[in-house]
Structure formats: C-alpha cells, structure tokens
Amino acid sequence: MRAILVVNPQATSTTAGGRDVLAHALASQVKLDVVETDYRGHAMAVARSAARDGIDLVVAHGGDGTVNEVVNGLLADSDGDPAEIGRIPALGVVPGGSANVFARALGIAHDPVEATHQLLHALEHDRSRRVGLGLADGHWFTFNSGLGWDADVVGRVAKRRGKQTTAGLYMRAAVRSYFRPPLGRPTLTIRVPGQEPAEALTAFVSNTDPWSYLGERAVHLNPGCSFETGLGLFALNGLGLPTVFKHVRQALATKSNQRGRRLVRHDDLPMIRIDAAEPVNFQVDGDLVGQRTRVEFFSVPDALSVIV
Image (tube, rainbow, N blue to C red):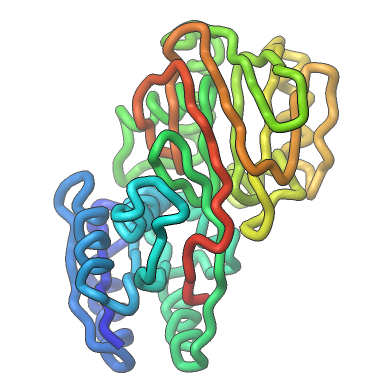
C-alpha cells in the first residue's frame, strides 16, 4: 500500500516529535511519503496529486481545516459533480487541531498517539467506513456549512487564529458577531424539497451530529443527522436573546430534540437552497469561504472511504 502523510505543522496540537512517531509507525505498514504543508491550499494540492497518481491512502494530521483541504483535493477531479467520483485514495485522520469535529464524529481518539494506534489497527484488519459528504457551491464539507451568524464567527476567529485557538475565543467571537454583525442581518430564504420557502436570519447545514464542540461539550443541532443520512438544516428566523439562549441550552443538552417557534429545522434532506437578500458570510467546515447571495447544498452518499 502506498500512502502519503500530510502534516500541518501550524495546527494546534501537532509537534515535530508527534509527526516523527506517526510517520515511523505508519512506515512499518505502508510505503510512506511525508509532506508538511507550508501554505493555504497545500494539503489540497498534495491530495489532488495523490488521487491522480493512484496512491492508496492519504492521512491528514492536523485540524478540521487540514482534513477539509485533503477531502477537497481527493475529490477535485470530480469538479463538484457527484457522478464523476471515481476511484480515489482512502482517507486516514490523526487529529492535530483544537476541535477535530470530523474525527470525533467518527470515534477517532482526540489524542494523536491513541489515534495513531487506532489507524494502524484499522489498517492491519483492513477496516474502513464509507461516509457521505456535503457539497456547497463546489466546496465539499465533512460536518458543517453555514450562512450568517456562524460564518461571521468563523471569519472573526480566522483573523486571530493560531496556536492559542480555544473555545473561549469562539465564544467571544460569537458574542461580538451577535451584537455587531459585520454584514448586518440580511434575510435568508430557504428552499427544501416538498416545503414552502421559509425565511431566516442565520442557517446551519450539517452533514453529521454533533455539529461542533464547546470544549468537551458536544453541540447538537440535528441529532438525527449522520454520515449515512442526508443533510440537516437548522435555521432561526429570529435572533432575540431569549431565542438564542433557549436554543444554545437545547444544543448543549445530550441529544436534545430542538424545538421552538423561531426554528426552521429539517433532517435527511437531499438538497437545500438558500438565497440572501444581500451578501452574507459563507463557511464550510469552520473555514470562511467568502460572501454569497445564493448557495445550493447537496448530500452526496458514500462519497469517501475512511480508515477507522
């Protein structure tokens, strides 16, 4: 088996020593090349080349941003068309970021050493899992995408992102973005199959649940959503403080079934279209993509094989 280990040395919990241990362990089972990323988009370029060269496995060692880049690289030649996905390398993940939502959702240990042992054991026993992905405006996402408030938060955090990224930083960014939204609060019009259009002020689209973590606390918006189902939609048509507090409380409760008169929520959707009255921030897997006035989201079943 030929494999490439993609390491983001800037990720929160990656170290040179950890990289060497991981590389040595993997090299005992596969023919391995190691690449350290040194610019945004580097992991995507490496994964794209790996797919074209017929590599069997690409292991991402970094945070959710690194994983997202690798996934988009593996699927780059599909040009955003699910029907064009051919044979691509399997994905392995060894967490190295602060949240590691995708890895946690797959049951991968947060500790890189434990995660390495899990990966080696899965390789030894030829164990993998097919997962569905989301596709939004040509960008693949593994766990979440969104327009509005959450994307505002992501954009604010990105300006200060570094080794000290913490849950507290996200909380402060959420509060500031709530009271001072950088682009205001344009109305979003949401269209899903079989339903009348609905209006909202912020929208989250999930590919699995939990959607994120607040420290060790899981954040649940669509508990019925998983890698084996369609997309989950969670949108609010009001952002008054009582509404926000209510849904934050429900989101932090274990597998709470979110309810509320300001809530627009659906599970297992094949597609979602969201139009904005004015440009709003748009994020995928916790990275700000830019501003959009329309995004179509698609569920793509069995898009990727993950060693787990």
